[in-house]
Image (cartoon, rainbow, N blue to C red):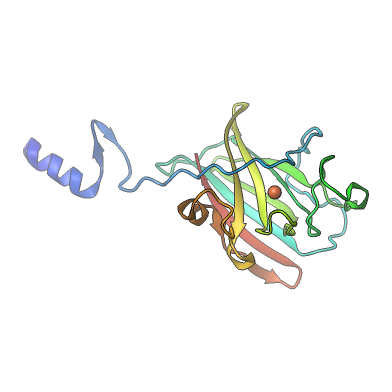
Length: 194
Ligand SMILES: [Fe+2]
């Protein structure tokens, strides 16, 4: 096979970019989204289980992967989530109703990705709150102590981003399906591309 033929073949399969071999399809990076006013002021809860007692509301098992655009898993990335409880309250001195926070709920947590880039949380389905009716979970991704992404997850079954993401293309990349597991549990999964 001559060089022209090799390049044509590689171009057809998307394998050759310059001299580097890359997968045929690059994943789009997860879009940034607003941090919002309620990033936790307390030290981070170093757990991926945000429910410390008997659940009082529907439990969300949120799993996912942190990947590079070529699909390679990111091991050891830290996924740092914070969210409203099912009543739409954050644990934050600037939010209202701090005397009515849920005792069993931590409101934030973190998980490190494993060798497959995977992470998992046990939390509540976030409630809606007045200024932002699109139910969502905020997160940051840290790699070696450096913040590399701040974004949010939206849920199709809860109405999606309702126009709150930065664009409709961004919303599509940030919105996941909620799957009913049983009467008390739902699950969702997201790929975060950094
Ligand atoms: Fe929020």
